[in-house]
Image (cartoon, rainbow, N blue to C red; front, side):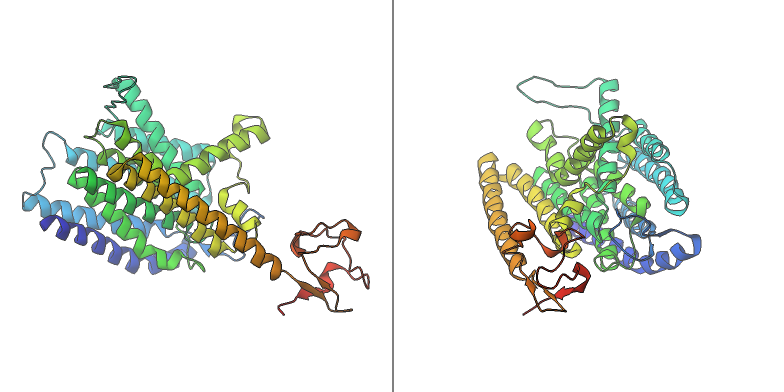
Amino acid sequence: MAMWGDVAIAFLLAFIVAFMATPYTIKLAHKIGAVDIPKDERRMHKKLMPKFGGPAVILGFFISVIYLLIVMSMENTINLFGTEAYGKKIIGMFLGITTISITCIVDDIKTIKPITKLLGQTIAAIIAVLFGINIGIIDIGLFNISELNEIASAVLTVLWIVGVTNAINLIDGLDGLSSGISVISAVSLLVIFVLNGSPFISIILITALAGALVGFLPFNFAPAKTFIGDTGSNFLGYSLSIISILGVAKTYTIAVIVLPLIVLGLPIFDTLWAIVRRLIKGKSVKAIFKADKGHLHHKIVAKGFSQKQAVLILYGISATFGIFAVILLDSGLWKALSFLLMVIVAIGIGYKNFQEDKTENGKYECVECRYIYNPKYGNERAGIKPGTQFEDLPDDWICPVCGEGKDMFEKNDR
């Protein structure tokens, strides 16, 4: 009972602090210039937006965790200075968060070079390793790998922390996207930690993170009042990567160790694909740091979904990864795969219905002659194939009846 009481406190305290602090970060953002200006086509918003919500989330997380660690130490329900040295690891995590936050606050206000931000992320990851946070033991069974040496452990840990930090940062492209996916990932990891019998400190940390995010999300979900900013998205990725290490620290089977990888599968896949895509397109390492419109959320919006629909779709995909990981741990591979198959079938049916509905509701009418363009039939005489949406018609396309341009058409809802 005491355990769940502490978990409830971790969530509620982080939630309240983040919820109360966010309006102040919105005001502060305007004063210090931490605002995002829609100066290119890659950005999905059309007006100036504050992007300093991160400090509110960090504050909620810090206050919740520090309060509980003090109380639990006084009650002797946790030993921060025992053989596991959780006190040392938490200090390392907090120092790393401070390092990455200072770097990204500068980026949110003045914008720094991607390589400079990467350097800050790497330093923060190295700090964590120096304070004892590492991926140390793996028993894959088939390959009989039991323990990594210090160098291999340090390199693998730094790559994991920097990789996940960037994965969450790069997926932060729509209102509520990175914060919502992080909430889903945190809840999934919480369930995994409880089922796995993970260290209680990891349960407290992941719950506090989820609480802070839920407190911030009402201000970030579409239509957003503020963005979480690089400070927030980097904090989320950094924290998730470290908490996932702490959560499986005493687990030596590959089946459990890969679960955080599955839970964070969506942002990790999006990041890996972005790296490959940019390398192929730019043909140099420098191209990796050049932003583009090739992320999953861009592709979904380009298919005709609204920004809110795109966010909900990606929430669903992220939740599917999380539930798959939980079922894999609790019930085994075959049940997890059957669940995944059912989801894929449901998505296929839903997408087909969406396309049909989109075609039926995509009619446009010429205000001059009342000709109605129906995407179901297209305009084959002009080389427009059936299924072509009005928005996708060439700019020089004209009404086949009166010769007026696209600007003389308006949406027909009848």
